[in-house]
Length: 267
Image 1 (cartoon, rainbow, N blue to C red):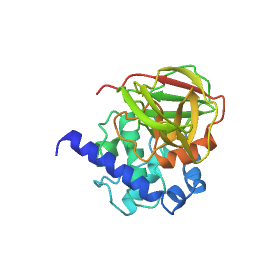
Image 2: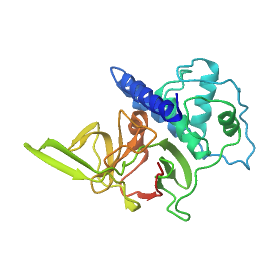
Image 3: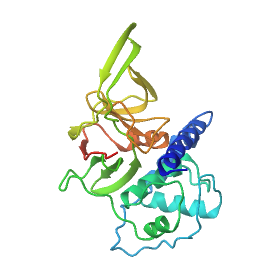
């Protein structure tokens, strides 16, 4: 299986894992539990700081269970990533946290946690600051790496894998406001400086699909949860987030917070 096939398969498994977790389990075992995991995370350490974490070194693959997986989840949460429930089960939520961590640390994203990822977990890099001197509380979206970073009071609070606008022109027919209409665009997530505006709780129907807990920051472009958040940009322009991240983000991100979108994804 080639690299593209492996990553595509991982993306499909991620979507499936998240979808299963959302049926009858109150989406990733509840907002309160996910909130506690995220809010406990301190600022991300840099390679210049002494690390207290000693990597177990055992190679892990999606579906793994046990104490080593739990140690991985605890480390990811400590560094500001969101692995979902810290339960020793390597599922879709933990996979997207691993992807985000690998991308921040210059590792090609994969579902396998092996030597290079463990070494980076011992001495991790901080996310690249896109807006030096920006407001202490802000969001930065790196389109090149497909990573979102939330800073609160000058410290990293949450780092998440994302999937932004595909950049591919589209025309879709949908029923909107009681009429069958055709909508066309180029599926871009524009770079620039914005602020969070209105939001909706739960599923919100737009003319291009369903958005979970959307927080809008540029007209009709929002951060929102989605059942599919692949490694490559795939949205109509919004910034897709894993469902468990979209559960907790509204409690961390207020209205009027600066949002800075930078970079360009290279296919």
